[in-house]
Length: 271
Length: 228
Image (cartoon, rainbow over all chains, first blue to last red; front, top):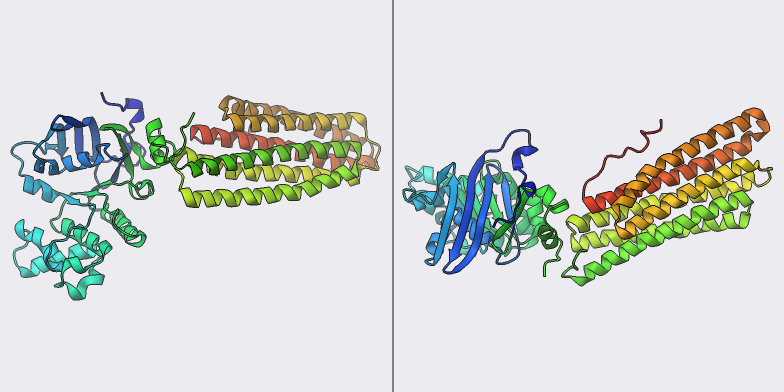
């Protein structure tokens, strides 16, 4: 049973002047971990050049859903995904799809900054190198610098590119991870609670970055901070107990949500 | 009925703010009643009391505003809670203005006390005032019960106040034309009538705020466009 009725769903493009392109589409997505079902018939579209926030209490399935979008769940043996998820109208669970290539197109940034135990330069250069995105050292350096610039980190690290990435502050490490994700020219960036380990200033930097990145990328973010979802996203999807409860424009969700469950959750009434 | 917040102190904050709005409402309502009574009876000490009460009402608004701002800063409210707090802020403003109207009426008491009052005029003013007070009472009840049907009724009933005001205006004009010696007295009464009519407008503002709090939709105001 899908708990979302048609009346509760509004297309994100409805009020905007130009119609938005559906970058990714999830249809009847069901996920099982062994015998336990974690997602139930989730229909959720991700629009191009928008930030879509996934919210909901712990265990609601939002992280499970975001991990389906670049098949991170493949790494869990007991995890079974059914239904259809497409990227530019192509089923990403098609056996012909190269998962490594998919993950380059749909990059991911995790909750805890996880730079490789290598230099700042190598952290960013690793992806483009294994994906063969540069023909020579100069091109590779260019990619590294541009990626660090886009991630808003370059100015802070330009004099110590060959020092260890793990020596940076938490906020800088997270922006390094974002630079690493950007380096392989992804189309979609998934962020699973990217700021939960950061202080308010580092959080503000990352949020500012998310807003800038939206110009060129499609972003999906899982967050436990309602204020963050309200600030950075254009659409918000509310999950509860594995169901998609409501999805709407962010402004509507945080001022006048349709579903009582959403209202309870975002106003801090959820037990 | 909404369930309680996980952080119960937030519920206490909201309850205290709602109580503050109600307190201001009760105060403003009684001030309007007293001001009109003072005017009609020529009771200068009652008029003086109303002027003093306005200072207290202003202080209540100041305190309530601070409490609301602090709650927004502390709790970062969303959805219904956010609308509730923004609504309280608006209502506090309307109620403070209502108190100002009462004070204005009270202040005119000394200017009309020496005149022989034509009875029908005062009855008209009394009628206008009782309509406005009823509106204020009804809208405050609608706020307590979050009753949107009653809030909508307040919006509709404002027409009657406008009509009574218009007829009173004509009546005063007639008196002024009949005898220029009436002009000073009638002008004072006209200002008072206008102030009472404004009280009705503040009641409709509050009704619109209640609709916003409950439904989340700002209904475009028809007020002022119906009886031009």
